View 1 (tube, rainbow, N blue to C red):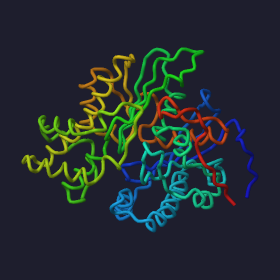
View 2: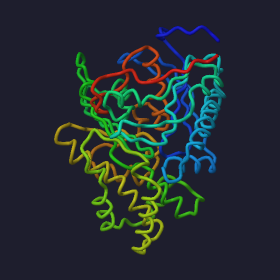
View 3: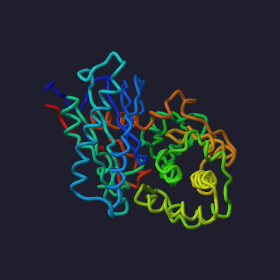
View 4: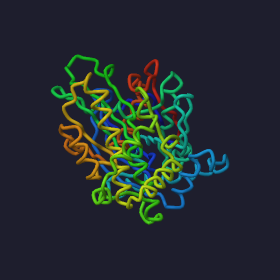
Length: 394
């Protein structure tokens, strides 16, 4: 075991951030160099890879997300199996770089969310940290959400902390939108030097991102495809406006005040199957169902910004990350609906795909430097805390 000094004091560190989200498609691994901490943080992406889940594993994960199909023994098995996959993804992202496992200062893992009950102060992310630490021989940080929930927060969203320290503008109010399985946004008012901007950060989940779209594609292709690549199916379809309004009116989450967070506990497979059957009962073609459900995601975002935020915040531009940035239907309709620039994170010289994995590397860096790393104004926590747990390599 190499000597470990905590808190972390090195000016620059090499780390891998791991993210496996509600889309349940695989593990994103970002190899980054991080200099400093807090508002002085500088981050450089060295490598990025996604280790895809095999179809059988994906189905096993989806089954344990729901009480009706889960079991404690399967949760235990997958806690270890996914940790092995996460360790594998660390080695994978190092390939083709000049670095090796021994060069890493730490690994920081979000884990795979299995169930999230924010109103009950409970959440579960699996992917055993001890296994990752042993396989990689690196300090391993993870299990961030419970610390925020212990002080009254929802344990989500967590990325706004990173949005705040990296992407504030001195001239324009911004919204940073992440469209993964769920969609969440961070509102960043224009920043003036000398302010304490983190106190103004607003962030929350807007509703479904790709989760229902992906399920429509899985059902409509009998499992041959599991997402709408580039939004091509939606672009071929016609939106059923009457049905879209019905879906909107029946969604209780959209009506909740923020701060709020959601997941597969609300937008689950049974709901997707119900929506699919409704679409078929309306004699809609496959592409029409995908187009309408994709429009539902777009509406949940645009209506939130226009009806809840525009009266309080001067949001001049929107930047999008996550898998949804590649869906041309979503991006085009966000632009039309919001009537302001909607751009990918690449415009800010930042990877849309790697954004969340990078964010968890930064959250791990703050934890190891014994700094607070939650955003109470976003999660509803009563105070700022240092989120995370640590596993040591031996």
